[in-house]
Amino acid sequence: MAETTVITMPGTQRSPIEMVKEQPLAALGVFLLAVFLLCALFAPWLAPQDPAALDLHGRLLGPSSSHWFGTDELGRDILSRTLYGARISLIVAVSVVGLSLGIGLFAGCVAGFYGGWLDTAINVYVMNAFLALPGILLAIAFVAFMGPGLGNVIVALAISGWVGYARLVRGQVMAVKEREFVEAARALGASDFRILSRHIFPNIVQPLIVQAAIGMATAVMAEATLSFLGLGVPPPAASWGSMLNDARSHLFDSPHMVFFPAMAVMLCVLSFNFIGDALRDYMDPRTRMRSGL
Image (cartoon, rainbow, N blue to C red):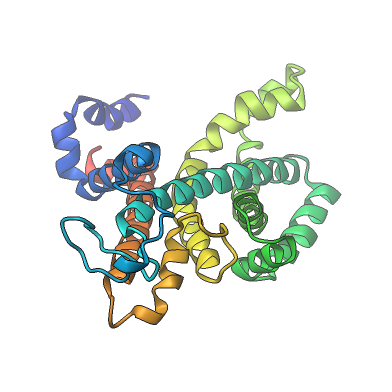
């Protein structure tokens, strides 16, 4: 216990400025994510124009004082569409990770806690069947069958992404359920639900948080991919992937159409990855011991 206290105390005494100096990428990730959250929440007030408003006389204009990010082939303001695109990307990221984590948590807990034929059925047959198919192809097939739309995109990406969480939960549950405090709770007559919720889940939540942060980056990229292929949110809704699709034929004569939505995707994905890496380092006791966090 004394050793653990020595490890954790320095981290609690550090000021925010010292933490930023030690984890600059994490601070950058939090700042970028805060910017995207503000853009998504206040898009109607921040956007200078209606993102769906057409102006055929102002097509393919470069960045200027009237259009900071320029206009696309239909004269729509790219800055406004980029701001509204943050809404779709963040909604998809949070919804996909939440749904995938819920499914994976249930399946992983059942397989890891009970074992036996349940573990065989869920892990060997169901999970391996989903892993045998590339996730993005499974999502494309689902959306192509059900039709484009925000809800269908979320369901499609959750269906293809829950297996990773289920495998992680299963392994963690199998390791924790053999611990002494779980055996003690079982000996005292605690129900399976109480053991899972009060004793096992608090001890497996840390790697799930890290996986969820990185999974949001994957969800943003996957949504942009589906929208780029025309299988995302239907027009006239603004999506970074659909903006990149519209810019394909104007890559050389109007590169600003590609640059700004591509930068938005890249920075959003980087923010989640930076935060996920920082959480992983902070929650790993060996890393904290080496860095003195």
